[in-house]
Image 1 (cartoon, one colour):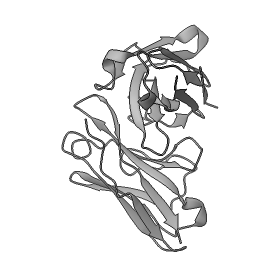
Image 2 (cartoon, rainbow over the protein chains, first blue to last red):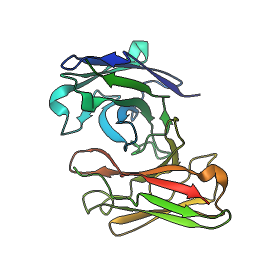
Image 3 (cartoon, rainbow over the protein chains, first blue to last red):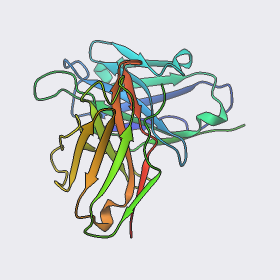
Length: 125
Length: 111
């Protein structure tokens, strides 16, 4: 059974750095083809994919936020960490982490099949 | 990379069928068969309903179906039920950023 859970601060001040941790179980991020992504959703708005990290440490970032984002993994702890620098009130959102698996043909998939419950991060002074 | 375009809202009566469109470009929806659809109830995490344009994950009702024509993908919900009332988001792989791009979202209302 695959589960993911996000953790981190609920409130950050403008200009601070946000660090979010995704702790997962039921899969290994050392398995070929597997990935974990971060997606956010401002209140009442659409989903936005922020970053994705794969089993082989291949990393992908949203171009509009690339300069502010870093995604890392700790395979031994079953964790993926996202850091976002220079936080602004417009970054107020629910942040989700999600699992990206392998298809029945054994290749990388292009969808998120399991999601964490999300964590609301508010940016305010 | 711009979000994929979806209608803001779609409604239907119980038992009816509705279709939600998702329009992109040849760099995303039109160029790859990697379109997925997610259902999101208020205050809940998104749930995968369709992947790779037409495939349903195990456990998802066969009332949900997906298709694609050119740069536009579609999600059809047949036999509409009250529990289908939710927000729906499409998503596609895009070669321009090698990351998923999501749609603007559609609120489905069951009348």
